[in-house]
Length: 387
Ligand SMILES: [Mg+2]
Image 1 (cartoon, rainbow, N blue to C red):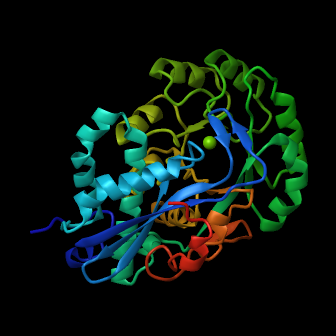
Image 2: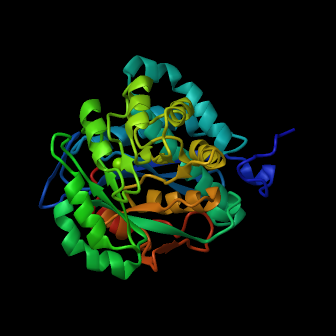
C-alpha cells in the first residue's frame, strides 16, 4: 500500500506514480554587452539549464536547474551531470511520487557528492529533476501546480530585485508603474558607509514602496556589525547575506544580537538541516532557491515550516522562466506574506521562452493550465542553446 503524498493530498497514488523513460538537458545562455562584477565572480549574462522528462506514456514535464556561475561553464557542467549521472538513475525506473524520486536520487548520489565535493551542482540538478517530475504529475492530473500542492490563491506579490543604488532613480518610474510593493538594492563593500545612501533611497521610494538590501556575503563580520548598527531606525526592511553564508553559528548569532534590522539569507544553503540551523541562528526572512536546492519536494515542506515558525518565506530567484513560474507556484502553495523575487533587469531566458510572467499591480498571475504553465517554445530555445 502506498502512503498518501502529504505535499499533494488531493492527488491519487496512481496520479503520483512515475515511469520516466527519458531525460534531456538544454543549456541556455544569453551574453550581455556589459558584464557585472559581483563579489563571487564576473557575470556575462543569464545562463541556465532547462530539463525535460518524458514518461512511458509520452507525457512531458519541464524543470530548471541553477547554473548561473561560473559564467561560461556552469550550465555545460550541469547539463553533463544530467546526461551522464542522472539519466541512468532515472530512465526506466519507477517511483511512487516525485518526493520518492527526490529521496532515492539524493541517496543514490550521496557517495558521488562526497567523492567529488560537488554538493552544489548535484543538488541543483536534483532540484531541476524534482521540478520536472512535479510538472509531469501536474500535467497528467490536469491541474496547475499551485492547486495540486494545496495552494489557495492563483497570484502572488513580487518585488523588484538586483538594483544598484546608482540605478534607482532611473528604475523608479517602471517599478511604480508595475505596482511593486518593494525593491531590493545591492550594497557591496563593507568598508563603505551605506546608511546615508539607504536613507536617501528610502525617502525617494516613499511610504508605498519598501526597501530591502543585499550585501551578497561581501562584508566581514566586524563590517557587518558596524553597518547594521548604522541602519537603526531608517526603515530598512531587511539586510540579506550581510556575512558569508558559511559563517559559523556563533558569527551569525553575534550579528543577530547586534542587528536592529531583520536578517535574511537562504539562497546559499543546501540542506534542510542547514536551513533549520540558520533559523536557530536568527534568520527572520528565509530565502531558499528551489532551483539550487530542493525543488518542490525539499522547499515546500521547508516553506511551510518557515511560516509556521513565525518567520517569513521569500523565495530567492534570478534565473530563467521555468524556475520563476515554479517559484510563484511554490509561494502560492506555501502561503504566508512573502513576495516573489523578480530581477528588475531584462532577462530573455525568463521572458522569451515561456509566456512572459508580467507584474501587474504588483502581482504575478499563475497560469490556470496543468503543471507550471505552457511548455517552453522550442524554436525560441534554439536561439540560446549552447549544449
Ligand atoms: Mg541575495
